[in-house]
Image (tube, rainbow, N blue to C red):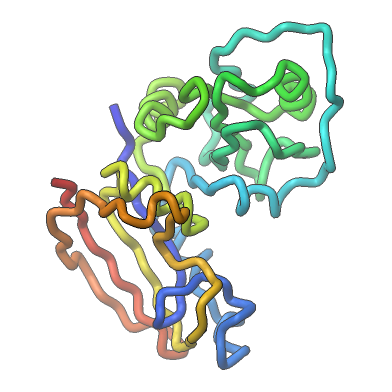
Length: 231
């Protein structure tokens, strides 16, 4: 069973998500992201590898091990209030920590990840699951998260590449978007939903979007929530 997936993001009025490029500069100081994140009450939140790397505290795991680990879920902690899920298909992130803000980390891997990397994850107390042999199967990842940990409500929180992959796979059920009174105004920054050049011609299977609510927030921001019907 797939969790209900809410893509929760904050953007400029032109849909860009790198606050360092926004103008006026002070706009990012009043971001309501964390407050709205709490209001959405997710069982877990999910980010892509690039965003996840920002939380890492180690440079690398040892390159070799004599241990062979099975390619099956390994869960270091169950019954947490919320989990931080990170897509890391090829096992590039060395964590040096077991949680982010108190939320235990769960890494989504492919089966090609080395035993040495799995050893490193176990040493850090970082849980992991496998969803695909060489490429990530996002639908399978959601099913496993639900089956292993009972996750029913997942907040998809970027970056733009991860969001776009879920959207094109027809896996986003709802959009929670806070638009701040700021602009980027130039090429080169990711948007709320983005893609690689190879995926640029792949439209998302969105049949309709229904506005659930709209709210004017402090400092001129607007919070929009849309129900997404994937055709």
